[in-house]
Image (cartoon, rainbow, N blue to C red; front, side, top):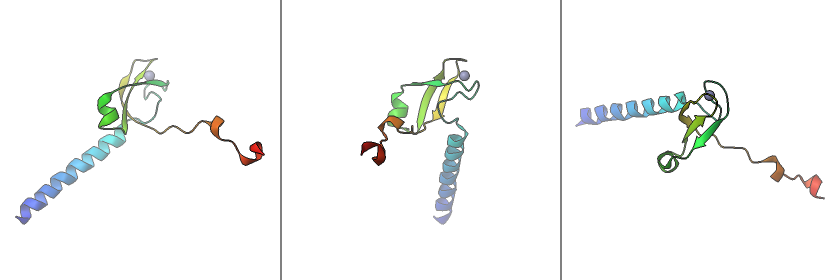
Amino acid sequence: MLIVVVLLATVVMRIAIVTVVAYLLLPQGRFCPHCAGEMTAIRNRFFDRVLPALQRRWCVECGWDGVVRRVRSAPPHSFVISRAARS
Ligand SMILES: [Zn+2]
């Protein structure tokens, strides 16, 4: 019984390692990995619901499309009002 648990644990660890490496190999952000142009996000229900950390994007300039790691966008600067500006 112990050998089954050990073999199952190694299989689970292999799957986890492959998943992490594949995630880290994906390009990140909204810029094209080929031409560095800005890419357009493509709506995909699968990624939005099941894997929200990933996003499908398409490059308008060179036509590359693929899955990238989603990045959180920074809040716009126009909403940041300092206390000195208000008073
Ligand atoms: Zn491109």
